[in-house]
Length: 218
Image 1 (cartoon, rainbow, N blue to C red):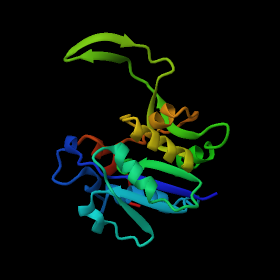
Image 2: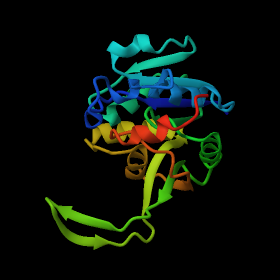
Image 3: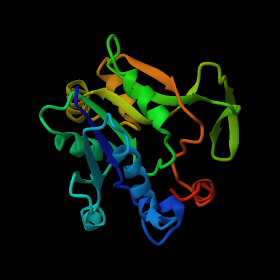
Image 4: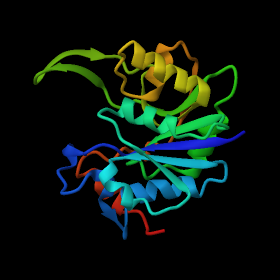
């Protein structure tokens, strides 16, 4: 079985309020994106890596073994561009956010191993810990039960052919998704949830940098 990793790094990261897109912020002498890429380079089950990013930043990916794809106007478009760059013999694809640079090798292996029939894919997630409120403007509308509510993470892992077909269906029917699992759900797929570490954060706000800068330099 051949496995490809599609790493999405096409965003501008406006909420980070940095001078460069957040995936290119330096941490311990490298960038957040490079730290993420290294996780997959060190994973023996990964056969191919595709990084989706703005064309203007292609030169920042210096690894000859890594393919690049141009980021789209949405995450959904970017993932599809990455899927199109996968080799013809790929069986399983692992989609991961380029700014989740604290993914553990154990979580990566666990979610890949969970992608097997009768499921069409598997996703990392963790149970919601906080009380969840629906808010309109600055006013609470109602409290939402957190029972059986999980926060999705990446990587999200699927059989390649099924995910590509699901993305093509979403594109044809103008579905706008927030993650790959939603695309697969829309196509009728069955997805297994694998509990991952809460430390697998998506770097979004300036305060998130504190968590990754506390890591020892590898």
